[in-house]
Structures are given as C-alpha cells and as structure tokens.
Amino acid sequence: MKATKLLRMTLLMAIACAGISACGNDDDYTANVSMLNNKADSLTDHQLIYKVTSKGEAEVVGTQTEDASITLPTCIKCNGNTYRITKIKEHAFRNHKSLCSIKISGSVTSLPEDVFSGCINLTSITIPSSVTIIGADAFSHCSSLSNVTLPNKLTTIGMFAFQKC
Image (cartoon, helix red, strand yellow):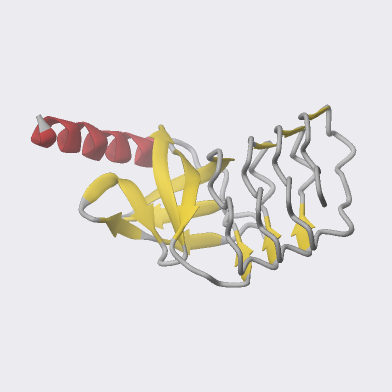
C-alpha cells in the first residue's frame, strides 16, 4: 500500500515536470527543496514545508523554523521538477510566536482560515495584489499588527479576520 502511494506521488511529480511552469519572471523567487522524510509529496527547504497538490502545483503547509522573517517562494524545485506555490494551507503559520514579517508571493490568491492567527509578533505582511480572499480569523490575535495594506482585487474578508489586532 505504501509503495503504491509512493509510486503514485513519484508519477505525479514526473508528470508535473512536463507541465508549463509560470516561474522564471524577474520578480519570482524559486527555492530548491528536498523530500521530507522520504515522502515524495512532502518537500522542504529547511524553512517551510510544502505538499505537492496537483500537476505542477504545491502548497505551503507549515514551517520548520522559528525565523522572524519568512519569504514564500513563487516556485519550488525538486529533482528537476518545478512546482508553482498556489496555496497556503489553513493554520500553516498559526501561533508562530517569533514571526515578525512575511512576504507572500504573487502566485497565491487567498489567505485561508487561521493562517496567521496568534502570530503575536507579526508587525509586517506583504499581501500581493493576487490575493482576492482573506479567510476567517486569518490574522486574529496578531496583536502587534498595526498597519496592513489590502490589495485592490480583494473581494472577501472572512469573519474576525483582524480580530484583536
């Protein structure tokens, strides 16, 4: 069963390589990653943890660091395959107490529920113009967050997104 899942994910990674990557613009940041715990769909750059979600795409699922400043890449590369970061998973940075600033790439279109809630030292966030949705409680209890510039294309702000900021 495990071998079948690993084979399936390895095939998914190989298929993704055949897709057209939108990475490579001057403003793009690409991180080189490696497999995490020998799982073909779990990748890391020793700061962030990524999961391959579909052909040529991946999402940020969490962090392995207590770094104060984090920049999300537009793309990641592993074993010659390139994956565009299109999502951040719910709760990915929840209660990351040392996080002070984060820059999100322009390939992300939404900030999901609880994504930064409880990041009490978060003072600065760069929200790209590509973001159209900010989920419920996305920044709740970010008590140091004092100034946020919202993108013009923003269509939805979830309940309590900025509660107790």
